[in-house]
Amino acid sequence: MCLRLAKEAGAFYIAPVDRLKQISKGTTNVAKITYIEHGGKQHVVDVANGLTVMEGARDNNIPGIEADCGGACACSTCHVYVDPSWTDKLPAKEDMEEDMLDFAYEPDPARSRLTCQIKVTDALDGLVVQMPEKQI
Ligand code: FES
Image 1 (cartoon, rainbow, N blue to C red):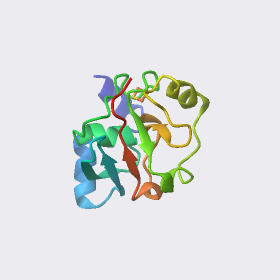
Image 2 (cartoon, rainbow, N blue to C red):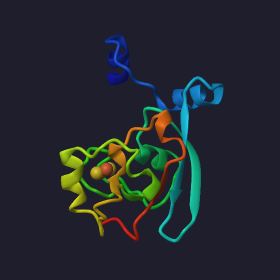
Image 3 (cartoon, rainbow, N blue to C red):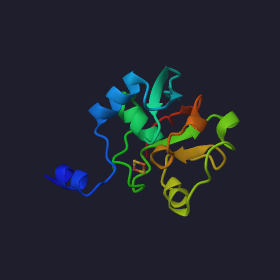
């Protein structure tokens, strides 16, 4: 019911299945993102533009990013360490992300980010992030 009303109101919403169809048809751009588990196991996946880095992990069942609050920037369980070669290429942290990182497990002021606050764009193609030993 809510989805129908949103569509009638012209709200922008693409259901995950529709997004997968767009990706397979090549009508949605994707960025290749490498998620590295704390133990070193790598997961290289295509994440559609418009999703967050957290949603890319969640949708691909990548362990190590729990995202307990669902992306509301209220839990810090989507914390990662960004590869040093990428820290200056990402959009700057908002104050809310900066505050929530204080609650993350062993945050690194230079490399820590909350993946729910990073929107995927073409510019993030090749991004590498590493999960911490644990989330909070
Ligand atoms: S998912 Fe909760 S802060 Fe990112």
